[in-house]
Structures are given as structure tokens and as C-alpha cells.
Amino acid sequence: MTSPRQTSRPTASRFTRPQLAALFLALATLAAIPILTHPVPPLSDYPNHLARMHVIAVLDRDPDLARFYELDWHIIPNLMMDLVVPWIDRVVDVYTAGQIFTILTFLLIMSGTTVLNRVLFGGWSAWPFIAFPLLYSGAFLLGLMNYLFGIGLALWGLAAWVHWRETWLPVRLVLATVMVGLLYVCHLFAVGLYAIGLLGFEIWRLTTSDDSRPWRILDFVLSGLPFLIVPVLLVRSPTWGLATQNEWEPTGKIDGLVTVIEVYSDVVAFGLTAAVAITAGWAARHGLLKLHPSAWIVFAVGAIVYLALPRVLFGSYYADQRLPIALAFMAVAFADLDLHRRWTMRAFCIVLVALLAVRVLEVQLAWRQLTRWTDSFRQSVQMIDRGAKVLVAYADNAQADDVRDLGLSHAACLAMIEKSALVTTAFTVRGKQILQIKPAWRDHADTEDGTPPSESQLVASSLRSVDAVQNYWDDWPSRFDYVYLLYAERGSENPAPAWMSLVYEGTRFQLYRVVPTPPG
Image 1 (cartoon, one colour):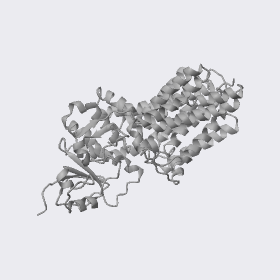
Image 2: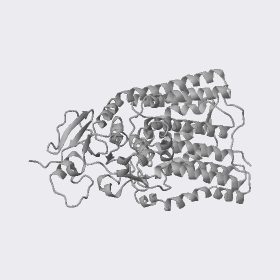
Image 3: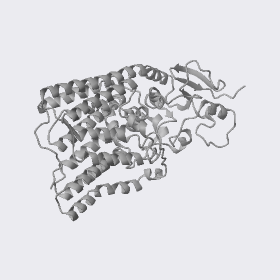
Image 4: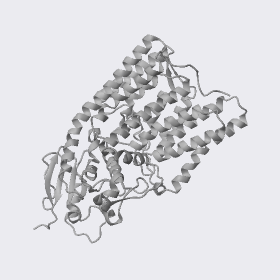
């Protein structure tokens, strides 16, 4: 029977195992510097997720939060952060708990890439460390924390599958079923990533194994059995109610590829890409860089899935654009660089440290600038009364498509942490999150992942009487205590001076106190 490993050697470089471990930890520490120095990183969904973690952790002892929110526990494919971070929050504050979870995610992804490379090529190597700069990607800037954690777990799952591929079939299937269950809890897309890797690897085995043809086909079919638990879990969960929320967009596929390497600077992205391409091309030309025999099949499966994926799947946005970064880590694991020569090893280490240092410096400098408004936003939150109801709106003609504005979109959710407030943009979609708005307050929040109202919509709503609330911002002067106006330029006029009084003005946002007194 064909072995899943291409070669068998104790190490794939001149590094000893302790040296490899020390190098891994040193690079991981360098990569974690922006996380360690920024308690609230400017990531899009991150403050919203962090607020949910806080509510889960303290709901039973915070009467203000308990007045607005409740937990509806189901086995939905978006739970890993909800299961881990609240327990950490019991020991440290929620901001530190978020930092710990993010660093654990980084470690899981990089260790998964390294271990998968180890089982594919039969030796430990420093080559997979080249993926460290990819930890900061477009998917990370969006704050897709459960999915990113799932990438690391999927890489570990593939490593386990390859390692135990020749064990007794029932044992292998049981282990894979457990892994599919864990990935389902992380994110549905993480299950898909695991399926892509496993399918590609098994197609390669099907075409190269020395076993009889009937057994090869049967073994191939049986390898898919662990995934049968996914439809069973889905149908029994509230997530199934989102099955019709799918949207295809043919454009944006190139953008999805760009997000693998581009973070804040086009120049840095181009430089990193050029450096990796030149180095890889030179190494391949001299026979130092090679791929596992199954790699091209895995890449082909991944490419087909990427082109076929919709932009929105089960109500989750960027369904297709999440995949390239995961495939990038997988591509690194399925490649191997010969580092036995001393000069090759030294050159590789220089390139590796330089690439990671440039990426970390890029992120650190960008975050240092962006967190000025983050700190300002946290100061504004202190002006809010505890237990208040906070409405989030966008300024007219808001330009929120710049990557540097991502951290502002859900920053208002910090009021849930600091002031136990109801915030209209908190993630409380049934089938996506276990956090739910209590029925009495459900008409005060966005439970559909929609876009916040514009300031013009607020003004129009304040000028008409409402018999029955249709939009959650209807009759807002009598139903909310504060309004956050996001993407408003400093010095912008109060759009509804009869109903709102400016409390705090920061960069790209304004906080207003609602004045529930009729005009005149």
C-alpha cells in the first residue's frame, strides 16, 4: 500500500528539535506583539464577539444585562469562542481573555501547519514557519475568530487523518467523526476546509494505492462517513432556518486572493509577495522546493470549491473570500524546502525573520494610529449611563469601506462590556449566536444582521408618529437613551438637535444623548 509520506527522515533541516521549538516560540512571540500591546485591536467583528463573551460570563450576576439578554443554547456551527473565552473571563478581564484566545488561535494555526507538514514528509522542518506572516490577513481584520480557530483545528485534523491513515478503519472513522464534530462547533466553513483537504488526499490515494480496485473505491467512499453527522446536526439546529440565505457574486474572487497577503499597505503586500515568489522560484529551480504528490489534487479541489462558493452562505458573509487564507496555510504544509545545507538554512532564516518583522511592523504601526480612536471610543463609553439603550446609526454618505475603518463598525458593543447596555448592533441572530434579545426588547435591536439606519432615516423617523414599530429605530426618541453616529466627520452638525444633545465627539464618530422632549 502506498504510504502517505513522501519521504522518511528524522529532520528536514540542520535544526535539532529543541532548536526548532525555540525558533517556533520566538517567531510566535514576535507575531503576537500587536495582540499583546492592543487590548482592543481594530478588527471589524471583534468587539461584538468580545461583548458576547462578556455577557455569557456575567449574565447570571449582572441584572442590567439580564434585563436585556438571554442565552439560547443550541449546537450551532459558531460556538468555539463562546465555549472557551467566558471561562477565561472568570480568571482575567474580558479584554485579556480575548487576547489569550487570539494568541491560542495563532498557535493552533501554526502548530497545525507544522504538524501536517511533519506527517506528510516524515520529518520536522522550519519550512512551515514561513506561514507566520499570513496570520495577519484580510480574514483576521474582519474578526472572524471562530473560523480562524477552526482553520488551526482543521489542519490538526488533516494531520491526524494522514498519520492514522493505515490504522484499523473503524478507529480512523471514529477519530475523524470526533474531529468533524469539533470543527462544526468552530464554524461550518471549517468543516468544509477539512473536507477539501481530506477529499483531495483521498483522491490521490485512490489513484495511487496498490490495493485492489474494489477495496480502493470502498475505502474512498467510507472515508466520507464522518461528514454525515453535519446534516444531522444542521437540521436539528436553528441554523437550518438560515439555509435559504445564500447569495452568489461572481465578482470579488480576485479580492479574496488578495486578502491572503494584503493587510494595510499595498507596498508591503507587494514586497512580501515578490520576496516569497522570487525565493520559491529560485528554490524550485535548484530542486530545493518540492510538493507532496497529493498537493496538486488538493489545490484543484480547493480551487473548484472556491469558484463555486457563494458570497453569502447560511447568512454568513464572505463565505468564499474566507477560503483562500486557509488554503494558503494548507499549501505551505503540502510543500517542503530542503534546508540541510548550512547556507540554505541561514538564507531561509534571514528571509523568514525579515518577512515576519515587516508584517508585524506594518500591523503595529497601523494599530498604533487606529487605536487612538479606539481609546477615544472607550472614553466615550464612560459617558453612558449603566443599563442604557444605545442606538447605532451611520452618518449620511458614510465611507466605511476602507480597511482602516473596520474597527469602528462594532465598537459600540464595548458599551455592553463597560456599561451593561443594550446595543442595537449586538450579534443576536437566531441560528448564528446563542446570545438573544429577550422578547420584551426584541424590537429594540437588529436581529437580522442588517445595516444600521442612516442619520436621514433617524430624522425622518423622528418627524412621524408611529402606531406600531416596524423598524427597530422607529420612534427612537422615546425608546432609546443614546445614539452613536458612526463615520461622522469631526465638526459635523447635529442631525436632530431637537431630540439629541452631543455628549462626546471623536475621530469618525459622535455620541449623543437622547432628549425625549417633544419639539416646542
